[in-house]
Amino acid sequence: MFDAFPFNEWSDKIADFWTFGGAESTGTWIMTALGFAVCMISFVLFIRLENRKLDHQAEVLRATGALDRPPDAPAATE
Image (tube, rainbow, N blue to C red):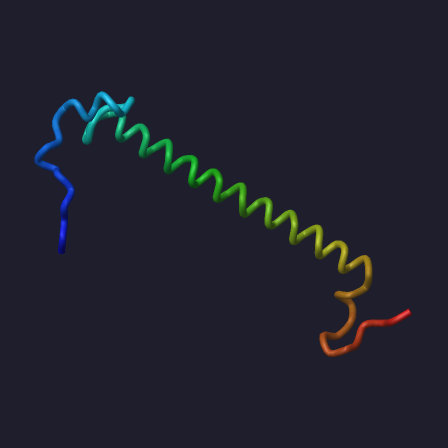
């Protein structure tokens, strides 16, 4: 595999560009934990949002009587 990234040229100066420090520092673990927490929270909120939307749509379909018809019955036309 071709790898042209100059890892040998890295020094401690690289940490100056990153607020939370270099690899294996406490800041790295804090950022990883925060990222994981944000990901999980957004996943749960997304599921709750979709559940509310599905519940609302089911209420609309029940109000129109669409859920009471058999699946192969045509819709009533007016």
